[in-house]
Image (cartoon, rainbow, N blue to C red; front, side, top):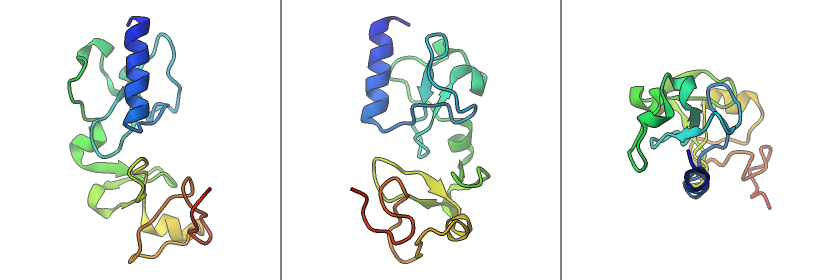
Length: 133
């Protein structure tokens, strides 16, 4: 990829609120290992090699779904176990959309109530749910 293409991908990831690390190996983007962004609900990024692809397999502007979104499965960010998307609790911030199991939130001491919009600890205090500054 050219420097311009790398910059364009980084800008797109920032605008669409994708992770800046690989959801599979937790490695960062490097010159020889670029990240590709899932266009599904997970908003995760992956090294092409971590999802058995070549970087050239994804054309600019072409939509791509990671294996989890293709299967309708998301990972809990506490226990890292996958579950069907419908069973997951999502952070209510449009820019985040991190997913959790309800029981993991309770076990970890989050102020989680099923009848209220949930915000993860990146956006609110996990003990009292007050907005983060």
